[in-house]
Length: 539
Image 1 (cartoon, one colour):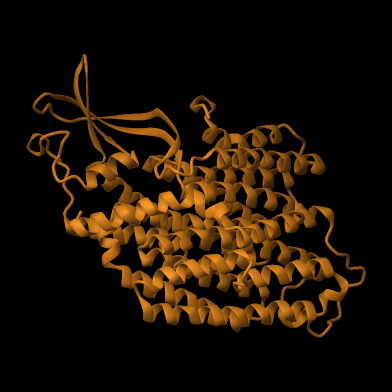
Image 2 (cartoon, rainbow, N blue to C red):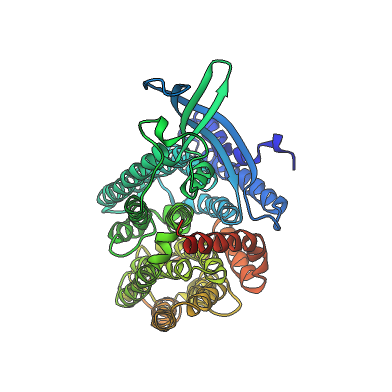
């Protein structure tokens, strides 16, 4: 595919076309607003499918690279041994590999399904969909950015629309949930920004020469930073020639690794940084929780792998046991508390914590199988959780409740919705033939090679998951029939389309996992070789 097509930029910024059109649509034209927004989300979905088909599965590195000089900030610095100028340079750099490719497609798919599920929104449609499309652009950018500053900008773009989408269109305690979301994610972003600035000002340097002289610049280019972190000698400049030479001792590397672990651990979330997520899952509108649980949580795992693990593999492997323990705690804590919840939304919220623990276990295995399982779990859980919260929204619209003791016997009145709920429940507990089974199987096989006892303890979470999922899903569908509002109808077409679509992808991944594992394998295998090479040589 020609690079001139700038496919990644088209995917990332095509939602802004919908924003531009919506600005000129009267706010009382609800049907037009919804139609424009939904159609707009289909554009990046089609482009992402094209990207997926055109991706070279035999290449481990970055593909579809786009690069443009973006921001230059001159620095006041004395002339040193032929170096006449100093500046910060941030580039517009986009690319995808086997790690980011499936997450880009997942983002496009879940966003389109969530746009359809937004039929439940009752007020201020124009503002809602403008914020929705801005959020989609931010999510795409996070998974494609190859410059630390650009990554940070896109990361922050996702926080601002989410704050308003929760605070304006959520349920009774929506403002508190929005504030808690902003505080926790703001703290995580601040920690991440400090870590990024340290990386740019140390490992991000480079030298260029032209007619006017030699210049030393500091860049957020991830590839440059990665190369310098593992160089034994400074090949660009003599360390004695500048006042702030590139040097990062073991202590600083450990500090940065822990900072990034905390920053992305808040987003994932890792226990005990999870309380904000519970409020979001229970108070945000279901269509927004589809995106939050299906995509935004995955940004935490993506950032942890891309920056925490790949920039500091020696520190990460040294903490393999710690990461494994954190994963086991997430799994068991989420599963046990999910079992005792009375609100089905909280059951799913704690379930997400438990399933993100499985991702941590796959990362902590530090082998190809475990890492593939972790990424597979990101995609699988993204599909399953999006479907679950789509169903939560459909059930709430009909019954005005998500309390388990107030729901029962829905299979008689809404058989289609109940059937889809059963399928999603079976996928969540890891039934063979569905995507949840593949991801969990790969993770535990990979972890068993490195931590047998903790693997056995972690598998207890699978048993607990079966218990709380069956308790909730069977209680809602086949439990004692409750007094329900009259005239309840089964799923409308606009609801059935995203339900069927998400189920189809869950089944396809369960039956034919190679559709995900093949583009993923070369990249993850490259990660595994790189991590172990650096860990053995001590960086």
